[in-house]
Image (cartoon, rainbow, N blue to C red; front, side, top):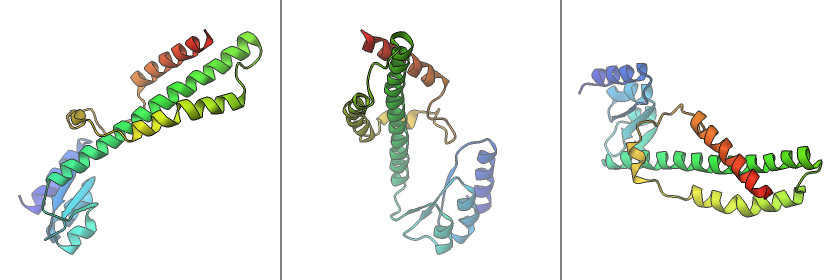
Length: 173
């Protein structure tokens, strides 16, 4: 495929709001590498201009490393979503518990020191374990992955709110 064709293909996909990764190793591929969202230069035999315009330099001529890097980055993103979801649901429940205590009982149910201990014991260990979780094999089959997507969408916010209410109400009993 010619360098001009590569550039035309990258621009066509970008016009459709798609994330584009392009590979190249020559001076003629420099425009394509800089236009793509992620430019990958082949490091072992690649031209220095191509390497300078690339975001990633593949040291060995192994394209499997690109797939591995994509899988790991999607796994990191998935773990971040899980951590944010978990921490928000727990902390919103604590906030609801405080509000219920103030509205119903005219006093907060827990003091600040108790909240700090609860956060240390219940938030830290699960968040760390979620962050160290390996990428799931199905993460590459997820076609809904978008670079500009939100960490929490309407569906997850609704679920988060329901779980927070449930946690707060069960904490009262």
